[in-house]
Length: 434
Ligand SMILES: Cc1cc2nc3c(=O)[nH]c(=O)nc-3n(C[C@H](O)[C@H](O)[C@H](O)COP(=O)(O)OP(=O)(O)OC[C@H]3O[C@@H](n4cnc5c(N)ncnc54)[C@H](O)[C@@H]3O)c2cc1C
Image (cartoon, rainbow, N blue to C red; front, side, top):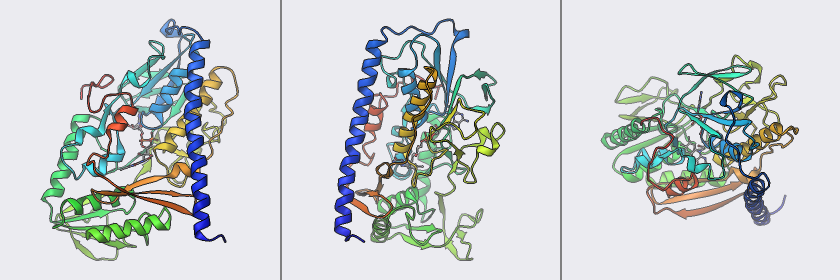
């Protein structure tokens, strides 16, 4: 076994190589888009709409939205194809800031980034993207059906439905409209502010972040974090587990490990743990129970749903059902065995799935394969309102970088810019009325 210092140095050099590969892949994608737009000449708008083949993208977050952009830029520009994006949310829900905005007031609107044609860029032919604010309720072999009743035929289907929770915030918003989402965040802030005894269930990233933020903002309240495992952040390296625990203790959050909250035991005054222990609680925040949103294919391809609820895929990100070669899956809902699924992983899978669809549309075999990359599993965990820890881990060694945080909104303006819109100017171009 190599000494820890040498293992860290090796990991650091792998990190440099990883960063270089990411940089060159961004450069390569931008250069190939430029070359394609020059060599393929002026794009044609889609011909007669009835003859156009649809590439339907279900869900537009880190996986679906990014895949839709690549598809719109790279599908043949002869009018044969059109990208149809179906997404029920009126705005891109920026999950990263939800735990923070459950506590800190005045920034709620920043978590809702407008979907906009600007994200697709000026090189996308007119009419190439159809945006549908609705939910897919069933998937057949040739078409999808929306909750509004419309049936949309597809030549290729990309499922990017991510994951969902039953309790909404802080892990997901729990409402499709921005105005209602803003109100839900404000209601959570008010609940935390009015409480004396807050209990958070789940010691993953969302639980640790909301517990540390709440205790930092309101040091006089009791905050208890209940986690079923023997360490918080148990899916990450030991250094992050220790760092998170130290931060919780420093702020005065009480941590109860190896315990679970009994469902429905919240009575406004106490909650009960499976051991029978009662904890004073007038504000319960559930950060557990995130599940892959794979129900859509339960009838079409039931054997492709793994025990975990993820959709089984081939390395090409085609669904693991040979009779459905034109159905692709990417993001949190895909069963790709990543240690800690996150947005970077979702967006990289989106690239591979979209590139394979483009290959297939151009008559080539969809041969690009997704392989998990350790560097994509990086996490930046906030630990109260003024600090964070960034963690890289290859399964045996880890690198930790401690940071100071000065922006209560966690610099989320950068996400707005990355999605092609001016921070925090909500033009709502693709929105249903919010
Ligand atoms: C609180 C929290 C904080 C996080 N922080 C970070 C972070 O700091 N960094 C990081 O990299 N990752 C972070 N993550 C993880 C990251 O949010 C996910 O990995 C990422 O969102 C996955 O993207 P996705 O597109 O696969 O799925 P999702 O984000 O789950 O999006 C799925 C989309 O599909 C839509 N959809 C679902 N069903 C249907 C349907 N039937 N019809 C049409 N559309 C549908 C949904 O409305 C949604 O927009 C965080 C997650 C949480 C919960």
